[in-house]
Image (cartoon, rainbow, N blue to C red; front, side):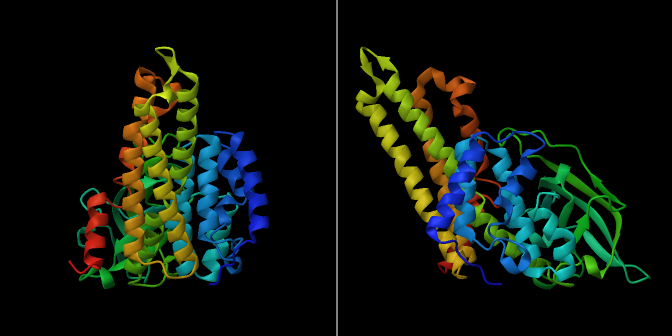
Amino acid sequence: MTRRTYPPQEFSGWLAGLRSWAAKCPDGDGLWRTAADQGLLSLAVPESAGGSGAGYEAACLALEAFAEESGLSGPPFAMAAQMWACQEPLVAFGSEAQHDRHLTPLLTGRAVGAFAATEYDAGSDLLSLRTRADRDSEGRWRLNGAKTFVTNGPTADVLIVIARTAEGSALSGLSAFVVPRGTPGLHIGRDIDKAGLAGAALCSLHLDDCVLDDSDLLGGPGAGFAVLMQAMRHERAFILAPVLGLMARALSQAVEHARSRSQFGRPLAAYDTIRQRLVRMHLSLTSARELLHATARQADAGTLDHGRSSLTKLHVSTEFNRFCQELPDVYGGYALLPETGTTALLTDAVASRYYSGTSDMQMKIIAEGLGV
């Protein structure tokens, strides 16, 4: 499917409108629907699939602006999880009927989407997946198993579930199913308590004889690995786009604090130790932003590969953590006060090393791409 790119003048005007909305957006039940009304969720989806066709770089810029203006970390993360791990596979593998039934409601904010692959004893180890889908005597599929760390799971209306349908390798033994909320046998667990990413809910799922048919398969039998790779290639590349906005906001606030607070009769900004911290924070932000945006342009050109996605995830999460190691010492003891946002950002930075594949897993993928 082809994607177009907004002319710069047209997109900059739209982005300014999004920033204005994000600065005063509601943080509550109405947030998801109003974000969709702004067009945020449909930016990366081709026009032929019901999206605006603006492309990946536009979507990343929008997520960044949303986080920067609102100061929220969890909601843009949750929306990005839907965009990259749920919408992307539906766009690439979904039938026209699945687009009508599932994708369109996701784009318009009438539904929330989630992706369920991780299990208690199987994260990146796909051969250890225990969730199964077996044919019954009537030719229908029966799903049984459990998933965990499902972002958006507590409120999801549409879930893409990866299950084993045959023995053997992950390449041929996995299938992907679109499971609507309310399917008999689908049990959605309570919210998992966590530190960080406030406003992004995750849970476990239990599947107890969920009955589905072939129309619920995404990409056909045996396409589960391809669906998973489609989701991970985009999620790893772009899940941290909102982080750039959070870093930009934190840097601006830290600079203002350094200018306004004085010690020993001089502003903090007059001391080289503080100035150097701010410069290193600026360097981390600039480096992370340049790489992620370049990766988005590769995706828009149709040349994004798994190695580049992992490189982007690894680099942005690393720079996010470096940024947050400098931030507390700009504030000193004030860093412990909630209004600075420092401890919350530190927690988000630690979490960024683990979701969508740990930093060690990203290094393994990159190393394999280098032939080592």
